[in-house]
Image (cartoon, rainbow, N blue to C red):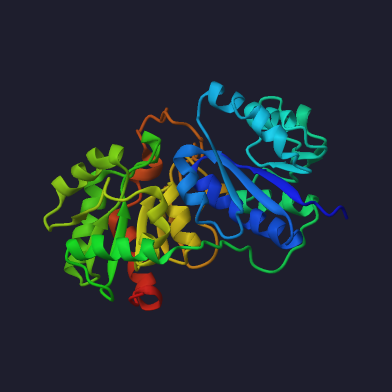
Length: 344
């Protein structure tokens, strides 16, 4: 087996996909402990990758074509001896090829003609497999060996924990108090469970003594959070827009439970060991559900799901989500309580 010493790992986006790639990265790290590993990522997610254990260098790129092309000469100067492309798109494969590495590895079924660039192509035996397991196929193809349960290893600095504790304390939550995180938004409109349903669940959890419900989300998700809070009869803590993406591992590690749409924070919660109750509609939990044990995925059993569409074409709009009742979500949350409602 070649002793690779300078490896470029290409997984630029998105938030959930980056988390899915962590076990493959960890496996490559174990296979080549003396190698210098660089992770190429879109700038908006660089702070999260900085907190992934084993990353020697984070290489941020701007999302524009000009931003990518501006990195070519710099990447070539690094003289990588292995490039792993887990994105599987034209841009990611092309940048890997332009780096000049003698070995560029990616999926046989990569999109946009990306396999044309690869010097080694990794077949995917079936479409219905989780992204984590699919990425691990590439790690295995470059010499990594299986070692039990896939590893999601963050190196969360103490400063992150301190900042989260201060943020929670200002909202009335002191260390040791139980609280439930709730993520009510999603990039696709078709992934969003109704605001009134989230509100009913949040009210009931607070009334039943689960602790405070803490709304999380980015600045552009404040409108969705406000819609849920407007439907609630009890007050919720609103942290939408108050935290950066790199603080999510520390924040979600302190939650007792996350109730969420299919979203990036869902994968971070699962990675740090926080139980998840997830609402799935147009997407497949088999492919991109919360990874590991101790999580619940709820979805309406309708023939058109999963459709993987950002636009609903069903005669009953969002039937796959709307048929999941607040009572079902509450039952899943209650089932988690005896195992996971211990303060961290």
